Image (cartoon, rainbow, N blue to C red; front, side):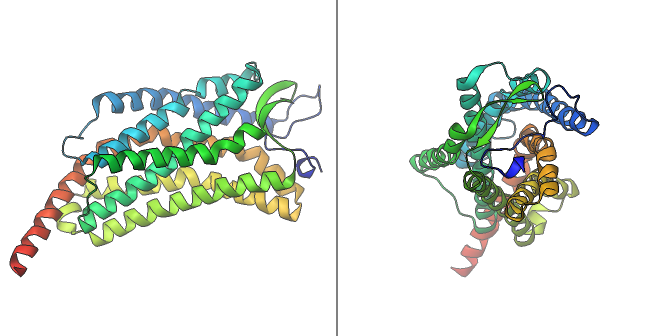
Length: 312
């Protein structure tokens, strides 16, 4: 079985050289191209606008501003590479081995940093609104950002090893090429665990935030409730299909199930493109939601100070 031999390629399963691709293969190529094009059109100008304008950031804490700016920069970095991937999907990879490895590393490093930043931002907002805890040390904020990028850089190093141009359907594509099943399992495990932990933390933080915070302060406006809920729901909906396919891929490797592996390889690109869409929605979901969180924080702090005064 080709997908489970010593050389494993996580890409769309190709037909024999010279044979026309099937309708399902056309579909699995068209969908990522459409989604990635949409990501480029919406995400690149959206994140540039957030970086320049910083909407509704006046009352935010310096840590929230730093995390949201870091998120916008990380989103923008991988979104800027999408035109190359769209070209590669349609016409093949023509930029060589070095660019294949470096661009792939940049994408994974940026995406990993996005996941870690969203996780940190969710926890920071929960702690600030619910428990009134702040991170006021400027040096500590810089260390946190440096730690996020350092973790992303380390987690992305394996991409430099496995990513390389290969021939797929008479076209050269920049794909993962594994030297062994153990190597593929290790990379899938790292990616899946990081994604599952990030999604779980985000959902947990916002659910606890909605339950614990004073509803009169934060959830007296139905629009605010809808906006806060959409942050967790959108992150969950766009990332979980990709993570589920990763888990199914692991199951296919361990069970040596050819049909399940074919399903995964046919859909990895599609669901990966959907996960990229989250970076295009981040400016709307995070930057423009800040005013509601700031109002909640101020009211919660006022309530805490009043309670302290009464106790004294």
